[in-house]
Length: 150
Image (cartoon, rainbow, N blue to C red; front, top):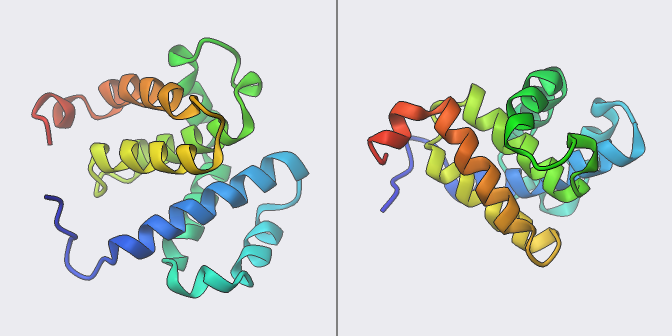
């Protein structure tokens, strides 16, 4: 059973990831400035129960490191990043950010959360694709953690 580190509300983090996926999807399609997308989502009614700091960290982190994240994902994709379904692409980018830049979050949590948001918002079998890509990416970015099964 996964225990939350001191002071972290796991449910609020899950909501932050779910809303970050939606915001990243909107950002990808609209081409709007990330701060405008964040501001729009801050006014959504369920954001008060989400971890707002984590939500913003995810979105700014993906935006700032987009080329690095896409570069890390590229060897594990069966098509160009731009050709991946937009929901799956958003889930992959968010998870890649967490795997690379948030070592405080266990890789299994990152992958499971990405699968769950893709099941909720993505195509019928999109979660399987996301799972396969992220499992390989975790082998690259979190090899020691994955080897020890943490």
